Amino acid sequence: LLLSHGATTTTTTKEEGGEGKSTRQQQHSLISDKGIHNVLLFITCLYNFKVTYCGLIYEVIRRLLDRMLGIDVELLLLLLENCGWRLRDDDPAALKDIIRLTQK
Image 1 (cartoon, one colour):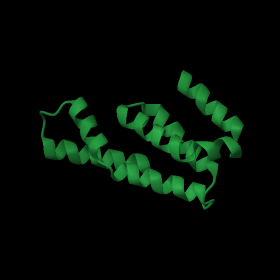
Image 2: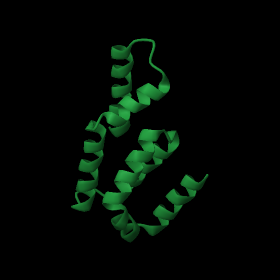
Image 3: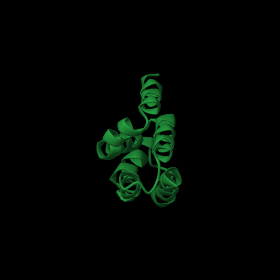
Image 4: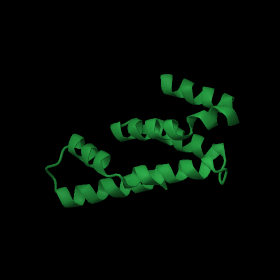
C-alpha cells in the first residue's frame, strides 16, 4: 500500500511534468508530497495502539530498505521516531536483523 502510493505519485509526476524532469526533481516532488507520510503515520498509530503487529512494520522497513532513495530514508526516520521504542520491546531479534540489512 505504502509503496504503491509512491509509485502512483511518481507516475503522476512524470505525466504532469513531461519528459524534461530529472530523477532528482521527481524525487523532490515525492518528498514534498506529504500523503505518503500520513499513510505511514497512520500505520504506526495502528501499531502503537496494538491494532496490528510488528511484522507489518518490519515488512514496511524491509521494503523501504530495498530502494534507499531520499524519500525512503525520510520515511524510515519517521517510522522509527514514532514506533521504534515499541519495535525494540516487541521483537528485538527482528530489529537487529533490520540493522544488519541497513549496514549492508
